[in-house]
Image (cartoon, rainbow, N blue to C red; front, side, top):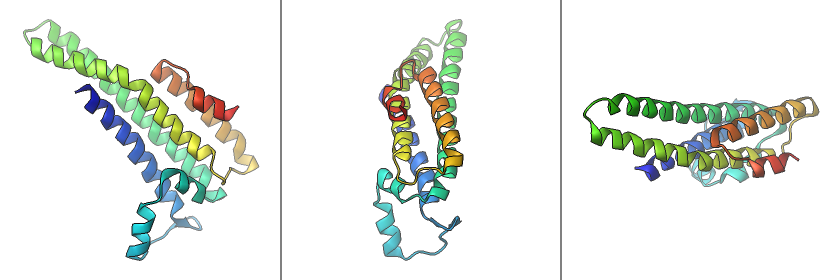
Length: 172
């Protein structure tokens, strides 16, 4: 059960950040490309995350970075909410008769606690890939990107209980 919980959150980080990135990288002049040929769409689907990051234009980078942070923060909040719910549920059930249900909640809580570092690491890797993109933000947006990245590091470290050394190292 623990592996499945972690896998679901890791897949969510991967799929949601890729969805955001694809929505920005396939825009031309800020407008989504409405019609593409089937062969082009199939070819686009094979492009990896880091390659998509390189395709962002400087005008696409800032809103994409902003939306990616928003999506990641929502996923971390969802994880935290699920953890708290299972902890509360376990407390409630301990006064009753449901020993098996208490054990199930304990297993989910343990899995959620164990998975925090892997989830934070994957989220940090997604942010790092965006920051390494050749489409760096304009000088006016550079400070905001730096501030938001530092804030995300703080959130990721609080979430996982460990240092986000790879992302922190990328900023320094």
